[in-house]
Amino acid sequence: MPFFALKKVVQRVLREYNFTEDIDAYRVFPLWKDIVGEKMADHTKPVRINERVLYVEVDDPLWLTQLKYMKVDILNKIDMRIKKGVLKDVRFYLKGF
Image (cartoon, rainbow, N blue to C red; front, side, top):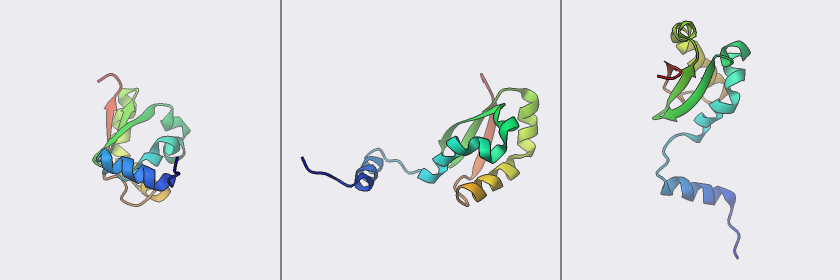
């Protein structure tokens, strides 16, 4: 049985599944607490990325309102921590809706 470089296998799988997102964007999931801070991370959860938009679930309407005002700051922190321009937007929604 021949061996293949992992990088080539991953690239082939991504092409086959038509995966066009920037893989670096997915680093936001394990880094979320570091990006937004522990208190905010206790009330939020990044759920998915679609077309460079991060969707974040929020557990309380007051936090939802606050986060909408902090969107630009959060995007800037993501740019600094992961890669500039990796995400174009962050959308917050109330858990259960």
